Length: 401
Image (tube, rainbow, N blue to C red):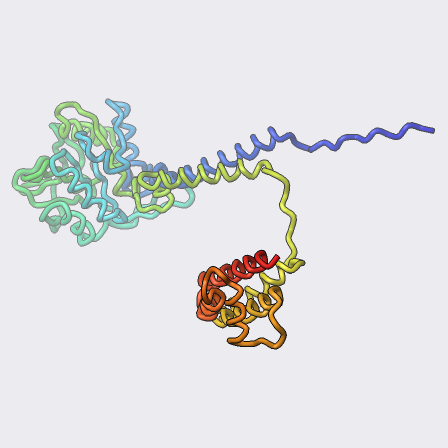
């Protein structure tokens, strides 16, 4: 006879360690994706056209940022309100699509700090053929620019064209911008003629307003003289050779009204960590079985106890428990009479008197307990009365034996 073939032990396709590290890597990747998705808008500030510090279009200021890096200390970016509290010169480039509430917060936080506000001028739209490029449509209406200017100071753009062809910026003469924007000012920092200012300073606050952005934007920096003049203008506003900071909060960075950020930032961070810890403990608890598996129970159990429990449940749902006291008392009387050998034919009060006579220690002992059962209306009262009747019958039965 040939020997029985040995059973080949079944092998799992992956070890438990491999599964554990696979699940851990998946959870880590999911957490990283969630965090990056939550904070991506803060690092993806609009740079596809428009007057923002990251825009490479003609009306943007990415060229000025790069120019300052090449000629001095690199400027920083203000992405939240904590950054706005810095004592650096803050350059706020206003766009027609900027957030007015963000500008109000900047004005409140920077009321004692040097700040340069650059007004918008051109209406543009992105050029689809080249990412980051834009096409100039027309000059913005004065009402749009005056709305932003009015939030900073009580002034309006001057009406009419300036006849000045050259502007003096720190001793450097540069060509005046096309359709130059100006405001009326008796003591301008950069004059566009008699009583006209392109750069002005507020009297009560360290705020500077550059009315025409074509002196420092990307379109202006293609001219070497204007590029040098832009550097001189920034140096003039930072006499201590301090660093410069560009604002990004006006263009959408640092907005805190985000449900996802509430989950990963105080004070709700503690709640998130608690939920994650509880989930991890539940996962670890589910990796192994504690004790044998529970057998599935029958929907309808066998035995007298199941019958009694089912009957009690039906009586409880029917609301008939209050009527069981006197019926149980009648059953207890009949049982006691049968066990103690009561004469045949005794009923009612006669039977109660005969049962009371069996108790030598207490007068009317059975009748008192029977009346308590008849008057019981709650489960607790019925339970107590039933125990007393059962105890009385058991004692009399033991005495008889």
